[in-house]
Image (cartoon, rainbow, N blue to C red; front, side):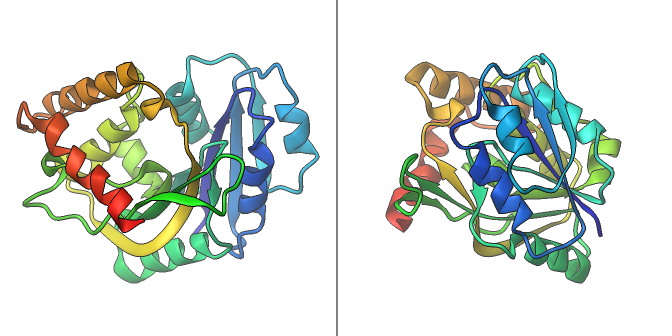
Length: 250
C-alpha cells in the first residue's frame, strides 16, 4: 500500500526540517511526501530542498489557507492511504507509518488513528499534554467530546473521493468536520493504535487565543448541523472533559 503524506507550509522555516526529516526517516518504503507551500517569504522552500526528503511534489503558490492547501495536496496524491502532518509537527518514531499500514491490512478498516503528544516548541523532549484518543464508540462518539487528533488520522484515499475534501468554509475546525463526516455520517470503519504517533508543538491555530477557541466551538456545532447529527447546546462544555484528561494523562 502506498502512503501519501501531505504538509502545508507558509513561512515555516523554523521547524520544517523536523517535519521533513521525520517522514524521510520512516522505515516504511512506499511513501510520497507532497508539500503545498503558500508562497513563503522566508527560507522554507530552500530548507525543504536541502534536507534529505521523500518529497515527490512541491507546489509553492498563494492559497486560501491551510485547509485549501490540504485539499490541493490530496488532489496531488497517488497513494492508497493519506495522512496529513503539519509543518511544525513530526512523527514520534520511525515506525509510525509501518504500524499504520499493518493495521489497515490486518483489520480491513477505512481509518486508523493513534495518540498525540503536545510538546514545547524549543524542547520537544518535554511533553506538556497527552492526547490519548481511545477507540471509537458509536453510542458516545463525537457528541460526547471524543474525536481523533487530526495529525494522527490516516484515511483511505477513496473516502476523500467518495465523501469529499475539507470544507474551507470552516476556518478552524474543517478537520473536525471532515472526521465527523467520515466516521459518524458515513460510518467509516476505524482502528485505534494506543501509541503516540505525532509530537505537536504547542501554539496551534485553534488554541492560540480565546476568540479562536470560541470560534472553534461554534464551528464544531455547525459541523454537527451540516451533517445532520444532533448535538447538545452544551457541547462546548462537554468537550472540555476529554481535554482536561490530556493534562491528567500527562
